[in-house]
Each structure stands twice: as C-alpha cells, then as structure tokens.
Length: 379
Image (cartoon, rainbow, N blue to C red):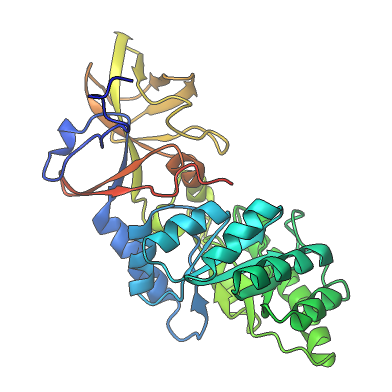
C-alpha cells in the first residue's frame, strides 16, 4: 500500500451533512428513537428493584454502553474477551462476559483485563473454574464467576439443580474468584411469537432457577445475583421475584425479527421503536417492477430473514447476493435511480458487526459518528 493511502476507510458521512448525501451502504441510528428506547426501558421497570446490565453484543459501541450506564445500568454484558477489551479501553468499568472463556491466551487476556475493571465470566465445567483461578492468581486479579444454568436454550450451561452445586463450591474455594451467582438466559424464548409462549418458557426457567438457588442456599451458599433475560421477555424475568438482573440488548435498536413478536392484542409489539436502519442507494432500475440496491449479503445479516423497506409502499426486498439487493415494486411506491432508501435489518446484532461506524442522525442531518469499536471482536 502506498504510504499516502489511509490505513482504514473513513466514515461514510460527516457531522452536519444531510442524510441524502451520506454514502452507502451506511448504518444509521435515529438518535431520538434510540434515546426514547433507553427511557422506555427505565419506565417499564419502575417499581422493580432489578439491576439492568444491557447486552453490548447488540451494539459493540462504547458510546452506547456509556449512555446506558449514565441512565442507571450497573454495567454491560458482552460475549467475547475482545469485546470486553474494547469496552474497558473506552471507559466501561463493569463487564460480564456472559459466556465461557476457554484456552490459555484468552484466559491470560481476561485476567489482565480484570486488573483494570470489574470482570465477570460464566462457567459450566470444573476444569474451567481451576483454569480461571490460576490465570487470575498469576495476574494478581480477581474475577466474578457465574455458574451458567441451561434453562431451556439448549446451548451452554449445566442442568439445573445438583450439577450446579460442585461448580459453586469450587468457585467459593478459589481465592482469586468471587461467586457472582447464576447466569440463566432463556434465549430461545426471545422470539417466540405469542405472549403465552413466552410466558410459558420463562415460567419454566424461573421454576428451575428457584429450585437451583434453594439448593445452593441449603448448602450454605448465598446467590447474590440471578442474571439473564432479553428484549423479548425481560419484564417476565423482572417480575419473577427470582431474577434480580436483566440483560436486554436489542431494545436499543430493534429489528424486523423482533417486529414479528405479538402482544396481548395479537398485533406486533411496539414497546420499543425501530432506531437502526441501513441506508441504501438504488443502483439499477432497468425494469419498472424491479430495483436493485447496493446492500447485499456483505452489508446485512439474513439469518432472520430479509430486511424491511421503509417509505416505499408495496416494496419487498426479495433476495440478496454479495453486493446487491433485489427489491420488487408491487404497490404504489416508486423509486428512481440514485435514490436513497432505508432498510430495517432482519437481525440487528450480526448486521452491526459488519460496519465500522454508526451514522447518528436527528431529523435529516447527521448529528454524530460513533465507532463500532468492537466490530469483528469474536475472539
């Protein structure tokens, strides 16, 4: 690379620029809707004593994490050590890695990071408890360690009840570790469409967690924190009397998949607003019934379906290739070559991970550019 060339691509916009001039594809954040979402979470939790620890894997952005903490969050969650490193570097002082950390290089980095901020981590294996203890001891650090309980997600975690006891006891014996409590996230419940399906799943999780906590207490181990919950169910956990910390993440952005969850009235839930969009440009319009935009597989995740199209009645994003998105025009809405349109991501978390920058706007002007500092932080 010639010495005169920059080492990283610049943002697709500058502050003060009209949205119509933002280069595409770009990840947009409606700051007014985003801030209302922060306020809505706090409003819906009034009267409860649960701690809020939002999940930063959704946004990977220190500015958002710090805004959440400024509104009362005790800290944030993330999934990987490298995510925690990016957040701590930016000033976040309390991070729970809501995941298992395995392997000497990661454990060394985790323990070193715990010398600079309060760090938590999950376990579901006795050998991992010992490895965490050894790494923290070598670093002169102390880690909060939570036993992960599988309450229905079918992923990580030991079964509820007796399998939790030896893990908690091992953590209690390790001088370089603190027993943080139980991590019990029912991730599969977040996108169950009807309220009754979500209630049933969380009721079963609560039952399992209560039995586990009662068993630990009967063996002389207090459970300081029961943490879990997501955007789709957090009010259920918050009202359970068992969970005292919740981890919603997507609520700051929302996405097309969460938009399919139904409320008690049988209509889509609209408690939180859509604040995250992808700005696209119509790059081809050779046929009146078809338009092609410059947002394809490399610019959004399709694991939860295709994105929605904003402001073009009857338009449907049909399919994506690497660099192109095919939109069918079946209604009264029309587009023109070069027109900028907004898309609603199907799944916000992996879509955010594709971008270096959040272009934050109010009205029709760019208000700020925030780095997605933990983009690609999956190790």
